[in-house]
Image (cartoon, rainbow, N blue to C red; front, side, top):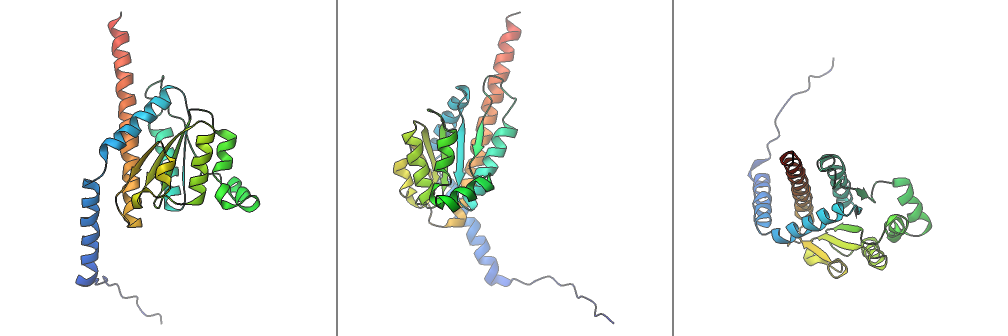
Length: 216
């Protein structure tokens, strides 16, 4: 006869509770010290790019790759159709796994993003790199390629920005060395950028409709 499975609630105890509380306390302090003015400037750069029908290419490694894909989804789905004159066009270089693996296998992992940029990038497009360290070889090469091809470069980094800081026209740096917290805040920044873009496009569309209505 099978033994009954006893249900119980795991007792983490005080030793585990304190690190969780400390984590969120530290995260709150980090959020309170974010460079909001710099984030707002990036929003302005993206809005200008969308108005000029330029493309934004976003990418990163690991958790940053997931943030890049999420940002692409938010922008293309959540901010499209609000203002016919400015429809976001965002491409995540992290999403074509067969293409990335082909470049990695034949040319080296450091070229998985730069080679895609050489195919798709046009002058004045925007390259948006995400990296917790700011020192990933494929990120740095992609930014170098972007500048070579005449694109605008934006970075989202942690750990003082690493070498990526100097490779970007504009770089938002989360002031932390904790990788998990940097990724938490990077995701929140991506959501804040999306929200600001969406609301700006919606407001622009409403003003346009009001102006047209007033002309009759």
